[in-house]
Length: 118
Image (cartoon, rainbow, N blue to C red; front, top):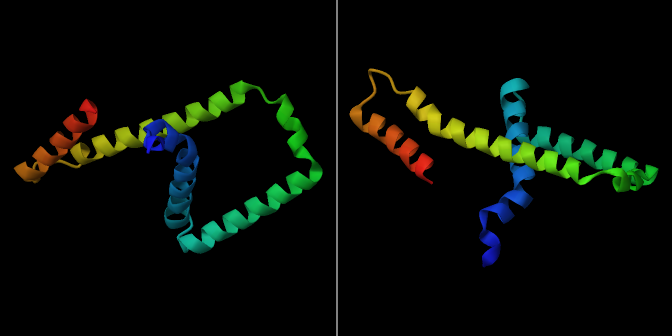
């Protein structure tokens, strides 16, 4: 019950959400290929690289990594989520022009106010 806290969810699913979102954008916008095939090959090569690094004993270098590396990674995850949330708040307002109905403008501004309030 208590594991639904935002920091717990972000700690585990943050990198996965960024990986899935970025790989989907790359497959659809950059290469224009089927997402599932693209993601399968990405995971396949990641699995091969994991096995090669395990056989080579790269895990022994983990003892040389400082907490600074973990903190930089956490900063990257946090900044990626902050950027994404700000983009989602600002994009509807940016799309409002003179031809937009008053109801759509009100929805965009209400979303911004609610987003900034929370």
